[in-house]
Length: 223
Image (cartoon, one colour):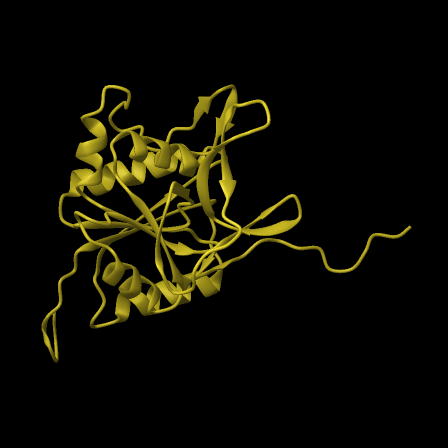
């Protein structure tokens, strides 16, 4: 594939787990991304996932590793709202050596509060390991964090052999949930913990914002 500025490098695998169905808006946007003549997505991998999404993420990551064709793995979950500029902006921010893991800025709902999916390592009131949300952050900045979600996350191929070289990491189980200080940690934050063991930095680009679709109730139930 060539463009007006020369050959296009198709060096990204787009991967998305799903429950067996996806929103039409998501697929329309993905179709637009794949049809973009200057786009860098060369492979697409999807996998039907049950409640245990860690298993699906592991299988998709292993498919990326085994393929060997793409340099970058882009997890883009089906409840994300992305634009045609989301991936190019993440690729521009990422670097195989300096910034091998870069996520977009998105929000999650925790205890009925909207919070950014950006975390720092901390301790709870009992002294146990915990993650805490950032409450302040600079705009339009490539910000280093201790953890972020996997909903819109770009990962360089070099990350996985570095993780596999660690004694405490079982190869192929990159996203498997772990328990630290009797607290269960989700698959995305568990992946980031493993990255910290390998001294692999994690970043979020606060200027690359994506939506996060969640069900809401309209109206009330009465009586």
